[in-house]
Amino acid sequence: MPSGTLAFLAISPILTVFLFLVVLRWPASRAMPLALVVAAAVSMTVWKVTGVHVAASIAQGVVVALDILFIVFGALLLLATLRESGAVATIRRGFMDISPDRRIQAIIVGWLFGSFIEGASGFGTPAAVAGPLMLALGFPASAAVMVGLMIQSTPVTFGAIGTPVLVGVSTGLNTEIVQNYVAASGFGQWTEYLGQIAWRAALLHFAAGTLIPLFISSFLTGFYGERRSFVEGLKAWRFALFSAFAMTVPYLLVAYFLGPEFPSLIGGLVGLAIVVAAARKGFLVPAEVFDFPPRARWEKDWMGTVEGEVGQERPGMTLLKAWLPYVLVAGLLVLTRVPQVGLKAPLNNIVIAWPNIFGTSLSASVTPLYSPGFIFILVSLLVVLLHGMKVSEVKRAWASAFRQVLGAAPALLFAVPMVRVFINSDGGASGLASMPLTLATAAATAAGAAWPLFAPWIGALGAFVAGSNTVSNMMFALFQWGVADQIGAIREVVVAVQAVGGAAGNMITVHNVVAAAAVVGLAGQEGAMIRKTIIPMTYYVLLAGSLAYIWNYGVGLNLGTLVLGGLLLVGLGILVRARTAAPALSGAGSARGA
Image (cartoon, rainbow, N blue to C red; front, top):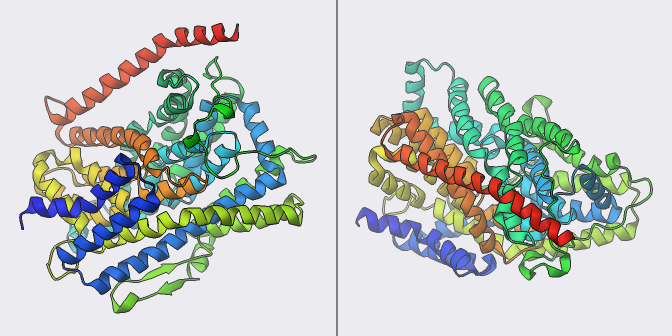
């Protein structure tokens, strides 16, 4: 069969998702079953994978989906518990004291707090924490999901204490040919070689991540503002860029000097301290405050089924007491992820496993006590004691969380099995490589020497289908290394841009979108979310790819320089328009106030 035909058949499950979920706007609960059928049919008829193997992949996916739903339930329970205890009302007042401007709040909660949580836990946890928190602050559910997904980019490569590099890239590259190359090239130990890849990835993220807070600000005002003006969000460009560098400068320094474990965690924490202090002083904060329209004028698809009310403040509920549950979540995530503490191994040893599913080589397992879901539930139980809650309040919180997670279950229980069928398509009687590798090989053949420009798209594809930067790196790191070797490119740069693309792909991965929508009760709006977040994702991979190209071939009259130049011109034009439009928008606001 011609390679082009094979590539088209391999991508058909992904095209099905995009057609029905994004273009035709079907809810994920309807689109994902259809995509699963397509993936299974192609796997069995073209890749000649046995029906038993496909069934085992589906079962494996169901186990993974249940693990994700456990995290979703924990996040929903924590939010409901804090709302019932009165903590959410106090947290909201605290944020209003920092700044009533929704752009500033989104940058602090999403970009900075979310980056810290990503550094500690990863695997979609930031959206499960930041999304409900923004909902409680009075954000539309749709806006909260959008922000939670957009920050699933820069911090992701170093999420969960560096797992996408230390596990994903390391596992993918850990072959005899790469080991021999490392030994012969003078890179030193294997961990030092991973560090070389890590700081290159951090430098690419440093460049691309600079505009993510600005995307957050402009998309908030463009999609959810009274005037639907993206320029209104760009008025916060000084604060957005300041917030970007407050996180990415320490992030890059940590990656270079300390390695891949702590860039996102330390970058997010340092940035949070700097930016909160600056916002309290009004440093670079726009003079005109942005807020959403009154709730009565919100569009129907902005709102989810999770309660957005913050409840009533209660006597004795100080800011410290209200924030303590989130401090406990962050602290426990760090303590259970850092190997030196000694908790990681014991918690990972408690495993519920299903080996050799249906007699195949596939297996599935979950580590319930290591899951962020367990930490969310544990902290929710501690809140009952810390905040002195009544039994009736606890019952309402648990009932609300159960009701919401049941609404999210159908989409995930089909989405994740589809992904596993897609990934596990190797080993069939056809002798073909798996569908993801077939796609990547066809793309590399077509791109030739220009491959560094296209390499991050493969990383993004891997993250989109697998729901994980770590898995994307496992699948494609060796492939990217091999292509770079064949075309004479810098291997470490191409692998680094694979990791960057895999991080950017998290903005649109179905796993993250469905889970993030679920924690704010926005099931059925997954396609609308992807249509928004695919814009910053596209910017991210274009910029990272152009920089990787220039890193390999230099600046000149070439494809990489042309793409970078085009992006810079667009960015400059946007900033110029923001500066020239600011007086007009301020005048319009003053006129309405008069």
